[in-house]
Length: 206
Picture 1 (spheres, rainbow, N blue to C red):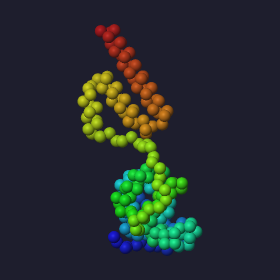
Picture 2 (picture 1 turned 90 degrees about the vertical axis):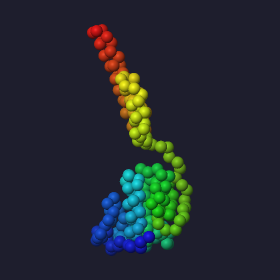
Picture 3 (picture 1 turned 90 degrees about the horizontal axis):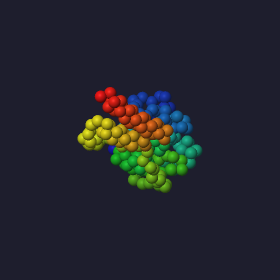
Picture 4 (picture 1 turned 180 degrees about the horizontal axis):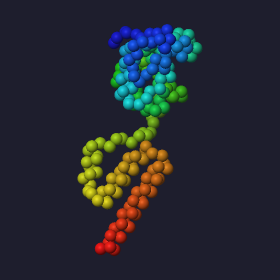
């Protein structure tokens, strides 16, 4: 683990910034605007962002000592060493987030479900606070190639289209509002009715 640091008296003066998903201003102390960060910790944070594939809202990174005292931080807080980050959990599943953070080498975890964020750092292995309650899965899994092939093998024509359409709606339902799901089912019903009318018309014409 490298001990290289990136430092600036104010975030606007920083040079050599390397992390595309984060800015010096959001990582700087909310007190005097200074910046002091562990390059190793920032590298791990960037890899975590890539692994998760979704934005990470950092509410606290580096803290100058005076600001750390004002917010009631620990006297030896790793925020003052540029090795800690507080991340909002609004758009993350906390359990999956923690697993990903551990995989990227974060070792310190603080849980603050009442405030909506998780603390992660690269200090000694430890944890504190009460873990976030498990959340209901909100997102449907991406269809696998195997599943797509299975649907294709179920046949062609109207029956197969109906089966495929039902699968699409069922799998997409967790991503849609209740109203959009209602519209989707209504659309399928109209589609089916249209086919029945078309077949009746063709039969009469023949």
